[in-house]
Image (tube, rainbow, N blue to C red; front, side):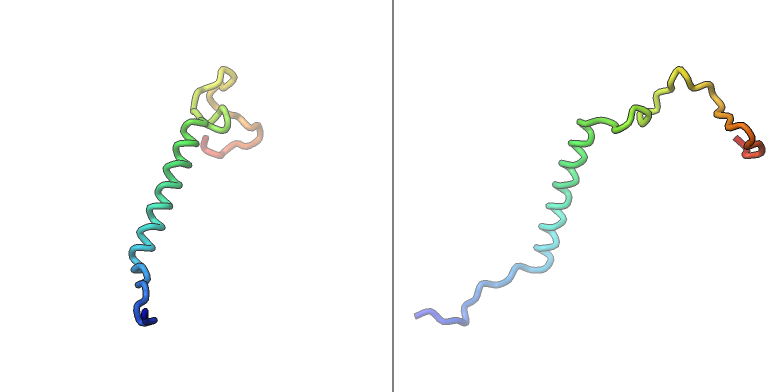
Length: 67
């Protein structure tokens, strides 16, 4: 005869929080790896100068901006 007083103990809150952090770290690692393999979204994100860049970007009529 089994009694109802023998219950399975619930996992400690710290164990659940630790599992959540491990899952979060794994998802971040997979996301970072996929982004690294995909490369930049736009060509200008690499910081490579383009031939049409001539140094200052004069916007005509915007003097005194300190650029």
